Length: 164
Image (cartoon, rainbow, N blue to C red; front, side, top):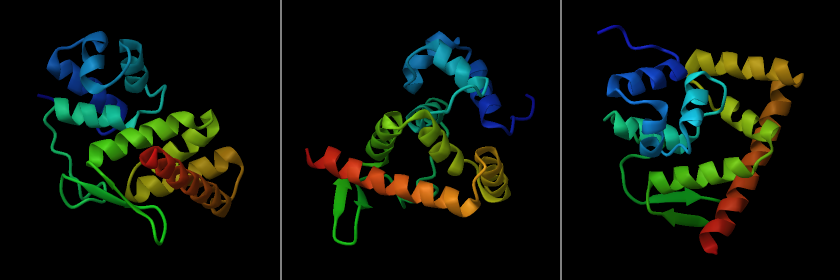
């Protein structure tokens, strides 16, 4: 068996191929709408939804490290919306579904900003944010302020969704 690829799009394709599935066969199992959506992820032509990534992980029996997501273990999740406001969700999957819903309400550029800003880890994250800053022609501080504003919007959106 060959080495597993490092880039996410290549990993997604490797998982699908190792499962012996076509993109159309895989789509319903990972939460994608169509095989074309799967191909777009594999070709790095579209931003991967968090819930679809989670679906790949479950399908491939890849243990999800909840501490990586900021949670110590599976189960109910408490989200701090404000100093005084805490909400309880059924689990990480519910939080990820709400995050996907909110990301889909954003304009293309806002969605792209959020997904790119939180992509990668370590030195890759630093490089990605620098590239993002250069591509948008904005300082890193301006990028951080936009992301902070969008996070505040997300907290307001999730509060409305959960309380309705």
